[in-house]
Length: 438
Image (spheres, rainbow, N blue to C red):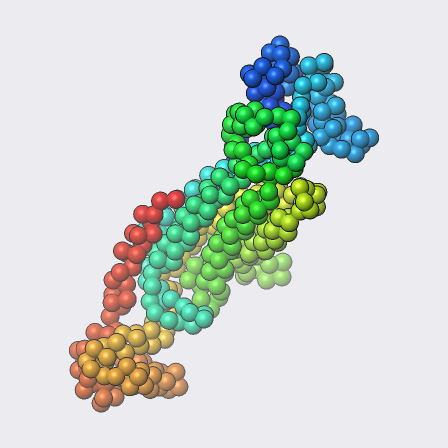
């Protein structure tokens, strides 16, 4: 079965020794299935299994590299190195198989192992986001569209949106794991000409893998494209929230900022600087992950039953993308947990537009009183332009308009400026987000 690793071990999944270890796992399980079916002697399989268990994987990997320097073929080098430690019984190893049977099944194992680590960290990040969303459930702030003040929201709702996005990321990742949890032991062109499908299914099942429905010499790369595309989507979601924090930390906004620890320095020239370096780093890393997803999509179209144009690409993007996304999730978890929020500043920014954020409430109140919508729009906009141009507040500008006062009355107009009208449903929406299962 697939060995379990702690989150700190993701780098180990992409070492030469672990690659050789997973190759050996695949070969051993194929031999086990053949032995159980009576295709090879049980005592020979016992020797193969014992040699595989006892051999030093680091030494086997090193010896494989030495042989590969001569053969220029990694799998042949590996088989030769294993034969040296196993002896005559190794003649059964790789029976009816082709190199890609081992390579693709091994890659599936390592991608699944990596994805499980990412999944665990996404769940931990989700816990942190939920905690902060509950903390700021009733913290009002201005919502912005096009970067311009729009209408009031809560910071809890902002975090709730990120929580919901993480929930979707988890669903996508789990689906991508199932899509990539596929191997093949069907031979040179996927026809099972030399090793029956029953042996393939039995061996892959013991590895925790499913059988590719129709293989060529390789597992089709649309599966891998979906997997790396999912990693890119996760990275993009992390980037979206990182950009939000970068904007909120701008000096003229300063509604929230990244943690700034004792002894930390923000600039070599300006001692006052506290820069959003964690968020900026996440933004940059997301660009890399997207580029690796693009490379995975380029790998889908191979010649006939196989070429190796995908191979070099995957040797780079598989470790780089999985390690980078895991790093990004951990970094965001640290950022969210330590995020410094300034509710008073949020309130100041909310009020600095002198009531303009309530313009839609007035518009809707006028239409309820029988005003044609476009006529009501002109009435409110007329007052709003005075706020922009003359510096008066919207309530005063509207109270000075006889048409508005005649339609709404003073109490009706004042009611339009109640902040709670905007936030009344925010908790219900947040509850909906936090209740979603991944």
